Length: 40
Image (cartoon, rainbow, N blue to C red; front, side, top):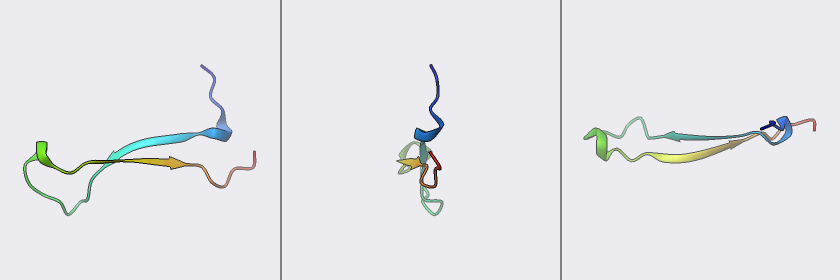
């Protein structure tokens, strides 16, 4: 599968570093990073 460098996106998972509690109950959220300064 070829990659198009002009349309790269990164899906990541994270949480607020100040959140606490039991590991299985931590509030994880998804984020999407996209390229915005492309010369394509």
